Length: 470
Image 1 (tube, one colour):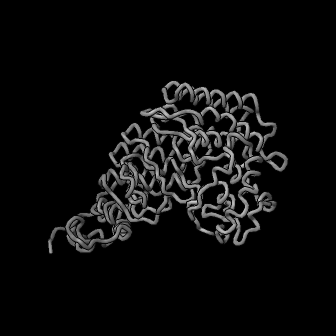
Image 2 (cartoon, helix red, strand yellow):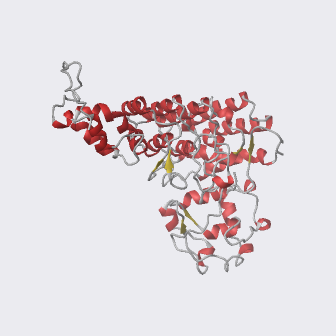
Image 3 (cartoon, rainbow, N blue to C red):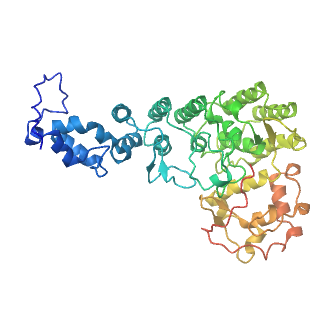
């Protein structure tokens, strides 16, 4: 055994010593370093070393251990201390871990993920830890922004996770995480929206593109959900993020835009509220001008957009929000009337962006589904097909209710391959909602689907016929 003895630590003034590291004078402090390393295992050489928790306990027991093992503590268990600091976005601890241990750029941990992804992540990188905090709201948004900025400055990657079930059919995962777009669509809090948009801008400035190839394999997504990126950015509460919009190159279903405007103005469940009547129209008009400035719309599309703005200004809803006395149906019909011109337009090839009316989009089905979420409306339903054997309302996994009889008659049911009776139903732009319902219930369709209605429970997981066609 070496006869080298470690001298007792010299006396320090109270200013030189930290309050959390008192001078140690116990027996452990008198042991040689070789003996201490035999106790702990030498980091970097011995395969079996103590866990980071045991290292911490030893460090706190002796000043010599503290000096010799402090760096090893931050490196143990695959930089577990760094991982812990990221999961609570403790910037002081994150910086200390980096200064003492220099965690590698390509770093992953097995986790029990709480991110609202299609499939829980099996592993987290540093960026994923921070985004999880942002997603579940466990940490203020400004701290998440600070942490992501720090990670980017140190060179940590911030592209999309590659362990999702849809990755096999979409290998373009060098873009920023799709989770950010999902979060943007699920909140209307102004501060949170601005924070998410700031993160999106930050990632784009570091070379991460927007997720052009969105995940189209989520079950139970209706075609009027605000999943498409231009459709989402046109919602009133997203804000004027002019540096984001020009980089979204694709088509936008105008029906989604229209439905989003309706919800912003009239739906009581939308948390964003106009601070004055016409605010949503003012915001939409500014975004419309942005589309024009960046040449993302053609002349015919501009005409439709301006017509919509005019209708919104000339026909403000004669109610504050939808309630028992005002269901908003007439207002929705007025908005839908603006789309007639767009239905007749032939698409121009090679454009960076275009507005479209998707062939499967039907505003009266959109309205039918919207009303189905009202318990009083469901209780008063009275359609002929409700008397058919096996009919029942279905509650989908996302909590939304729908009527299978409606889809069997008014739409194309992918579940059992029954085709829509287009020759028996008028085009939606030629009738109002009540007239369309009358046609669906009409005698020409009687008994054609009575044998085909599926027998399902309220918690059925039958695929939604309104799968996204974006």
